[in-house]
Image (cartoon, rainbow, N blue to C red; front, side, top):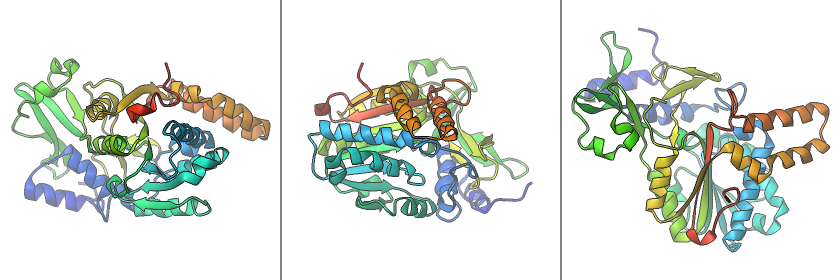
Length: 366
């Protein structure tokens, strides 16, 4: 058996005491354990980290989201005290770019109190550095529940993919929850619960009900969506979520580790690699719709950013750029919009939830 990571003995102990744990519990421990969790202990972003998000590629991304938020604020009737909420703000780069773009709509900027929902002490420190010079009130929270009531706009870029995902595997006698246990050599291994998941078949989408043996189905609890939708229904506002995933609920194992910009076995080095799984946008839409808010999208990121005018913004930036900077701008647009390998245009989707009184948010017009 290889040397254990700092988190691994705790996982082994829990398995030996209580038996194999659901995949969602394993993922939660790996990412958010208070001492040894991946997000608790590091800033994972950038070229020297494990992955790069869209706001770190170019300022254009956050600027367009900021202008989107300003337009939604106007649709809301320009309330004078707006909670601008970001879930999982990374290094604070997108919020900084959003607030800079908000300067072109002075009333919007004056109305903002920015709320950043972050569980990582390491990333919160980085966010405070990034946003130290802004003249907008900033508040940090561990949970959306901590944000005071009132009109709000919520943005979430690559937030939902890091929420714990449950998995079930289909065997000859039905669906069983997939778990993480220990093999004969004492290594972490995927196993399955002995009992079938009662009534699980009836909750599956039609496409998954006829899945062959050994198929895997993933689902997340939708608590975050329910709470966001509840707040929108109660106080008014909208939410924009951007993430990678699929538009229809379907079978497939998308749980993956990411380290140094490459994929890794999710059971290797727990606590030292990022764990993610694709977002089921259909399930998110169903959850939000059940709360009475209007659902818009999902669209591909390519379609959404194009409608918001990313190519016009790129041309504006290139007018005052050096040749090297102009090449970087072109490269960023290509990466944001390209549907091929390495591009984000097709894999990433965009969905919005809104107070039905708002009408259609920008970028989602037919």
